[in-house]
Amino acid sequence: ATWDGRMRRIFVDFSEVASQETTGYAAIRRDTFCVGLTGEHEHFRGRIKDLKIWRVSRSAGELRWPTSAAQLRLEPTSTRTELEQDEKRCPRGFELLQGDVYGGDQFSGGYYASADSIEDCARKCAYTPGCGSFEFSPSKKRCFRNSQTRPTHDENRYDFVFCRRA
Image: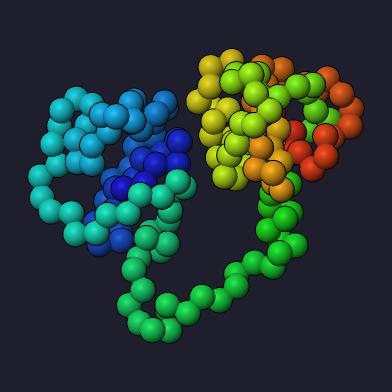
């Protein structure tokens, strides 16, 4: 099963068998999360052969295990420049603006709020009530969430990318 923050998908033998558009968190509390059990106490019936938990949603093709030695070889799919450009784009649901909002993360009060990627930072903003924008630094992996939807300064801060809800 995968969940990208909008769509839940269930796969059987790498083929999608069900999907449902959702809002909110997939798991309400980290300490009560359970694979195969819903918040409504519905239990999965059957066997789970392979299970892996990622921080990002995967496609059916990405979920498939390698079946030959040739598939195990890692070949670069993107150049460093392409990856750097991807880090300068806002994820779906957000738009890129020039500038920054003064200060650190307005919801944690700190300058050390972090995220693994710009998508992770966008997800944190999307699930924070009142978050209208965020700033992400690809080099420092910093994620500052803001209540403002417009920058307070016209210039970007270092390598931060300013994204607001679209």
